[in-house]
Image (tube, rainbow, N blue to C red; front, side, top):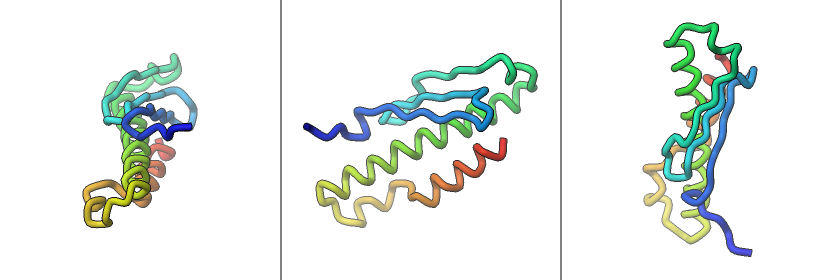
Length: 99
């Protein structure tokens, strides 16, 4: 079975209460945002913050998969320096879970 590269996949993240969901392409484009009724009680900036935090986590998951893809095909470490790290994703997840 052929391996699907990060660019060919989609990534999804949601808030802890599952009131905001964001789906991102492997290329990093936002494909969809889903807002549940409960989140609509918040003001616009608070909703936007949740959308951005979800998008960040999904995007970083894709970038880490891209890093793994490049490592798998033997790219040298210096060629990976532009990509986010597991630490970046962990920080984004902490931020998302704090909302």
